[in-house]
Length: 447
Ligand SMILES: NC(=O)C1=CN([C@@H]2O[C@H](COP(=O)(O)OP(=O)(O)OC[C@H]3O[C@@H](n4cnc5c(N)ncnc54)[C@H](OP(=O)(O)O)[C@@H]3O)[C@@H](O)[C@H]2O)C=CC1
Ligand SMILES: O=C(O)C(=O)Cc1ccc(O)cc1
Image (cartoon, rainbow, N blue to C red; front, side):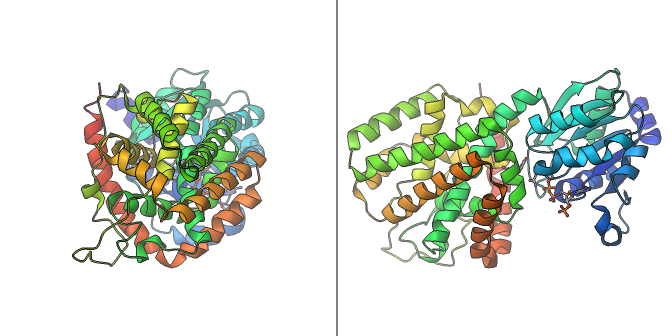
């Protein structure tokens, strides 16, 4: 813990530089400046005048480029697209202030650390960070990963910690290898699931909240819709970068697609026994020893619907086969991943995904109803088929490393949902706040 007098002295004498004034850069700049740090920022030089104008009146300074930021800053954070980290660090690193600490905010750390090691002058220390939440989530109490990678001076790390404490997040200390392993298990596969749902709905041209109570109705379905649309309201490069640049993520996403298609094959072959055996083994592995369950409640989630339909007397909702949720639990089982081990270092979306999967597997009778629907019900067959194709297609795009295909696939779905994104985001924000309050309270009960 840094003494108050030291913190005040650093605030008086040190400057924090942020290169890349996008969503996350802006969040950091605002928070640090609010906490009393001197903050300088930049975006691309060709948009300097516009950026300066739009942030007029804020508590931080906008400079023209990364050279001007680097030469005056004691801690420099590169908050830019993952795909371009090497190129951008190469561009500005020679201007790094003598003895500065430098890090990045990209979502996958191996390429970032490699770029910093390759291009920075030797006197620069390296401490990287990663806020495990999006720009519209309050950072308070959310996990923030700190990676103390190269510290030649004893005060470099305490200094960065002091800066980052402005966010009031929960600090998690990892190496960059640990970070990439964990985020592959958590973030990358979570996104693969919700991205695949979006593609499936887009391909069958269905807005799932518009068809009444017959299908896609109820709390679990609200979570699927709201989170999928929330991801599609973001920038494609964030998801592409963290999946494509992380080799461990390729394995997870491939397994997820394989689990989805193998389970679907069991559905259509009506192999009830084999499906039940496989899902029970997965349930035992993932939830068997877990006594601190998150237990999201269907009724808790019921009010967050985009649907305007009021259920009428006698109207019934057909049970869903929940292929997307069965597939995640199966892939954790196949890869021998205990998702609860990663809660300390997880994003809100991952905790919600785990919460609804747990709800499906642990609510008495619900897994059996779901298996029944999967084997006997035909209502979700076309949707499930599209889901399998979508999961496969994302896994191929990621393993081929194609940013261009990723962008095209993402933007096609984004366009399809465009009219609904603002409303979905509003409802999604409310839902996420409620769920996180619930999940984070229950997490405290974990053994
Ligand atoms: N969004 C999220 O939820 C989270 C994102 N991250 C990571 O943080 C990083 C930033 O993400 P986010 O803020 O969402 O993305 P943004 O696209 O909003 O921000 C990146 C910014 O960097 C700018 N930029 C590009 N080249 C340069 C340059 N040479 N000099 C200065 N600025 C430049 C971009 O400009 P232009 O658009 O014109 O290229 C853009 O404004 C990414 O690596 C992402 O993976 C981490 C946690 C959460
Ligand atoms: O919570 C999620 O998974 C998000 O979608 C937001 C997000 C995106 C990228 C990150 O590196 C961290 C958080």
